[in-house]
Length: 427
Image (cartoon, rainbow, N blue to C red; front, side):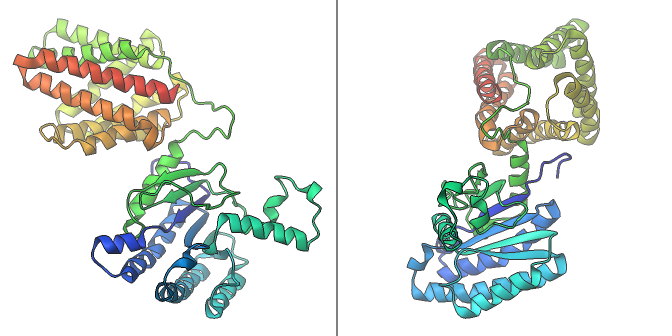
């Protein structure tokens, strides 16, 4: 994980898409469910390794009873195995197992296993594993009011502070999930943690749950770490104030000057390149000329490493630049991570320069802008896409000298769109 990653205390995962995963592969439905069960131990282990205290798997909803008897019978048997498997791991790893949802409709053999697991792990506090079976967010709230009625709780005393003690997550240290991961391309929460999830960050995945990997979990945590959680108030991340049109012209000028310098390494060409880059730094980050000159000097050392394809050395050089920049701007990025991500897109650009498929480059830009400006992947998408198009147009301008004017025009156009998009999400 990148240094200074803010790891969520509670991550909830909706185990969705098992059946669709199987059908897409011409397999029986039960094979999809089996594949989903097979990956859960790896995900749980990785969550602990990443420092996630509470992990919730929503495995069976209150609506899932509408499925066929055969499928439900298969699932209930698998849940018994699921609880047993995680129970063994829980005892070894000091994990507390908690069932969320109703027990009255589950098979008695499964309930016995759940109760045994809950009872024998109740004193574990290092981690929590919530297993949501026959769970629904609305149902949970209804059951909370039923508990209040049994306790003769006076409605007039009901507040946001005391309602949570009647919910399924009542005695947990982190009852409110920080991050909800929804696989299978669905973009709804389906009532997961209807009360607790008011400020939960949601991460949508196009892949079905059986295809969920530990690397996807890591990516989701990093994406969460970059988000600016305001909780209805203000954040303290410095806002960008640059003029997108000026930024586009400066970057275009710097790229053209750098191209001229590569063709003819005169002192005049270098001076022009340095002047444009200095003003680019000043305009982008709102810093003074002296500070910008320091950053330009460091960048040129990194460019020398770039020329030798020494990516490790380039990243080490750039760390100093980002350390200075962080002090100057109070931005929240991690200097070492920012340096590595910049060098990543340099390397990927060089590798894909003659390749029409730029998806990897676009992801590199998305990660880079996400780190610098604390943006989610979704927020950084338009900026990264336009910057990728600008970079491609820039490459075409250098390669096709006869049509360079057309391609430089396209470069500036896409750069302008990239900076407009960045201004929209980082202001």
